[in-house]
Image 1 (tube, one colour):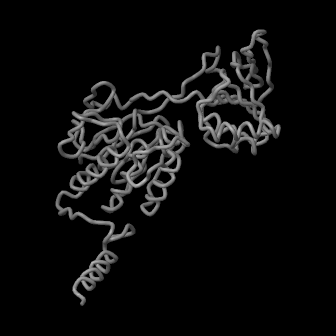
Image 2: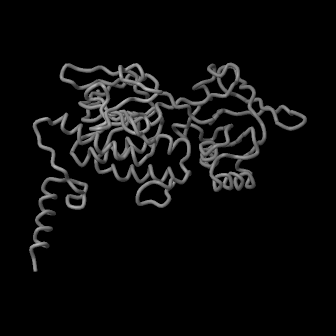
Image 3: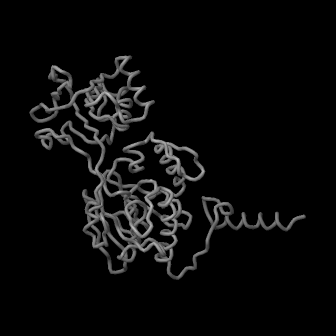
Length: 355
């Protein structure tokens, strides 16, 4: 069983920043996320999308923001359970919680912070017959380990950043890479589209547009896909492959959390925003886009603010007999607020008192 002070459900920007604020208070964090990598929507859906409303950054790419947050929390060594969805929660006699994922991984924490953005993400599946038959047998809706596709023939479908980025990445790993999109225009970043075109020109990638996958072929696993060209002739083509990866985005759902006894309003979790963003269950908080309250704004910077107040409240809950003292990183730094903070304070006093 994994034990921690604060269990954060959701590893998007808000959840990651909560690790930093908790770390300043010497609180240990562990994060659960259904996605295979941290960053939530920023990593999975639009890593190269520019964001303009992060304080101190006139413009920052979503993927770069996640990278910066991961670097910022690295000193606090958070734990991660990725590729697993939080399923059940059990409150213990001492007020702590045990959260179990769909794969049976148990987590014990004194405080639970739900930072699931718009909820857990489930892949949007194409309308193809017998799709379930091929899942985990050459059919995947997300790429967890690129090495699984080394020296294999891979067909990807989609027109967003995820499809473009993985096409570029797999071009140097897979034996053959084919990208199929039903339109000639792509929704992804322009530089990614240009990079894919460069790979096409170099004959490292085959691009088929406009076209659509109609059928998967194979006895016990994916052996080929059948596609239809969206031209006047409606030509049919069979492509031999070892793997088919449709990347049509992810659909947000509150998922099993909706059955935890929390007060829900319009697929969001109601919280007390006048104090600490705690839910109707003491010890369970909700921060970021997953919560709702009067005047709520679904902005990353608002999630950062909510995470900060949540951590202060969590500290008081975990250490009710300790007096919370506000600490400033400009004085104490990040690595510690014990001896290093005292040394810093003495240096400041000496400087102020000197002539």
